[in-house]
Image (cartoon, rainbow, N blue to C red; front, side, top):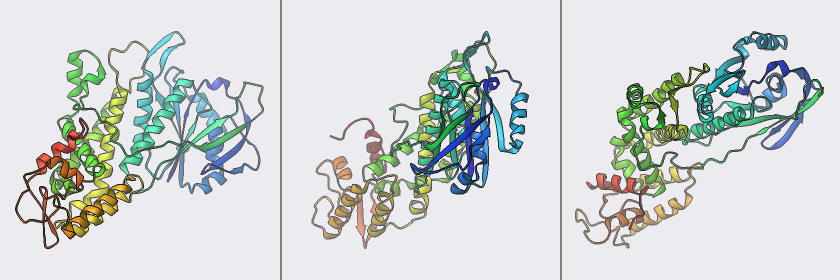
Length: 435
């Protein structure tokens, strides 16, 4: 478990030593005030050195990531000297130069604010794991940079929540806020360290009815777009990956878990899982390189739609979460019985992150209806296919075990050859209501 503290650095000439009184809130309740003020130039250093906080959070390792806007001079030597003077070891911090925007010292920095947020997000996604703890020191830095920091952290929290949907873990996220500090006036400042609450829901982040493409999201001429897209070797899989994510999500949401079984070779094959992992890594690495040139001056290549890129990454992370949640339960289960179908439903719908407890009630109703043989839409009639009624309606109305979809023999579920139709119906749930 690593404690990461992210902080945007401002003009360090204005930083002077203060006595920080730390008030730390744990699970939204005040845990303690520090026993005596901490003298330092930054509240984040006091948090990093506070043994009570480190012990309470069971921290094994710790690091401050100082985000250094490129509009500041690139000479960080003075800042490093100050850090060393307050006992910060070089292994306990890292200075990351980030893009800037606007005019500073008569130089124009031509980045969009959303690109800066994306830069921070990409830095975080390469470092932070679900069991780590993230503090955001928002007491320094330009307001827009601080907003970008908070937005990036919120997206990281979503990313880790989705990619670990198989359990109840969430990223612990805290915000460090200090009283207003005025140069050479304040001698003391109270610092509040409290949880930053973000509500996260079981949804597909990228839900547009179109294939995700990189080129239209970029601001550059057409030739450069084509050249840029060549760096994405796995882009030909994007459509398939997104379709699979939507079909798995809608199968769970729509209470038709039978589709997960009948399409398991398409949804959870070793090949598609490798493409999923490689696609995520490739997107992160290519855009990290793209945003690495932080020099002043006009840029003729920019990202004009960061939100769609992040939403797509988050959707792929949800797919990764589905793989962890379902692979062992689905892929390795060669014989599906009516009883272990119910067991799968209990496993999924009792998951607190998914939270679809009512689906389990309907699934139990339909399984009992199948066993009792009282519902004509569920009645087991061997190989006979009921050609009457609305097949799509019956599929969703009866938990995917209607007479047109499956046959049950000796308690074993045999899937009829309707996988393609079921997949189409699941994709269409994002486009139109079932008639």
